[in-house]
Length: 78
Image (tube, rainbow, N blue to C red; front, side):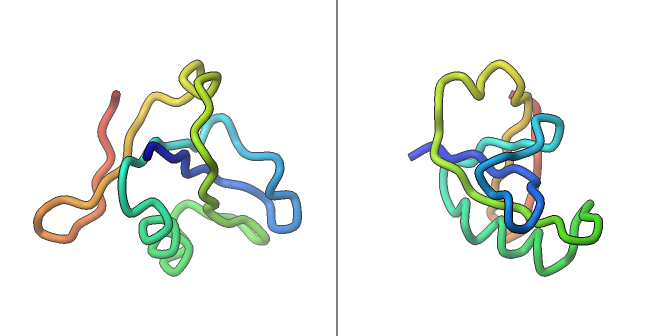
């Protein structure tokens, strides 16, 4: 099932960044956990959060994120 991983402020998870978004097909929560653990591209009080897919997200999401066969997290343009 397709999911959206996006950067958000802690406490306001109902809103997310439209600039920092990725689609993930599998392992979305695992990827978000790794991004949060390593503080990837995060400021204070921000985190990566997993959302359910909605067709309207296609307008502003241009990348997908996945785990390759070597266990590395990679991003690619859709």
